[in-house]
View 1 (cartoon, helix red, strand yellow):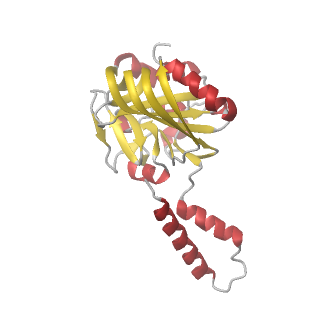
View 2: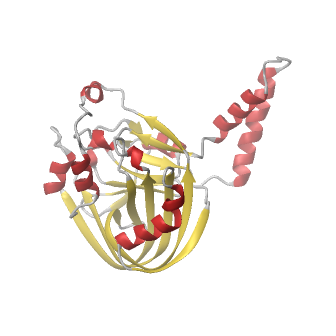
View 3: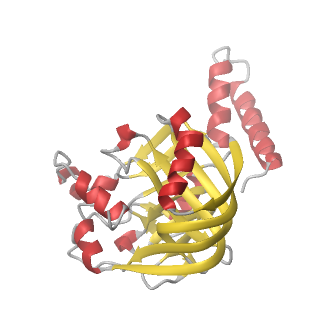
Length: 282
């Protein structure tokens, strides 16, 4: 996680480099200075997304962006890995994989992702939560407190607490030729149930207009405090915890430059498949 001191040093270095490059050039104005500072610090108010969820649902599990790059684009988020090898949880600048066998490990920098969404977390609000009965109840709390007022922006939360129950799933790594994601979930997803566990929920909210690029609404992953358990959240019950919330207004989308991507047909309605893989059992 970047400290305020580290950010200050980075900004000062950027200004020194800019001024040295400008010399007496009258065209070096405040706009260029602002741009240089922003580039040096990183865009903390944008969601960086790798590819499209609707590309993943068609079976494009080929990683296109390394974990090392993902870390430069954000310190919190969600996604998956090359070959659909487990669920990704990004928390406090570290990238974890919860695989289909229930194992959690930190991903190597040279691992790649076919789909992920990350941003830098800057807390805009926090609140205490108690006695949340299930995932739907949690979403209603988040919608009432935050989404109702910011429904057209990206939002991300981290909820640290004690969970009476935590039900998660992941999937087994795939082999070519890749099947569509809905077909994979019929045979290769695995469920794991935990009780009285401490950990953190990482939740991403995408506005309704993102339904052709991602999953609209809330999408949540979990990782335990000891980094040994996690996955895509199917259901939960929360005894007590603290939710920290961040609103993000920008979007930085990176699409894979491959023949496969250029040939996929995105005109077909994939809403049922997206709902099936994001909310199993609905």
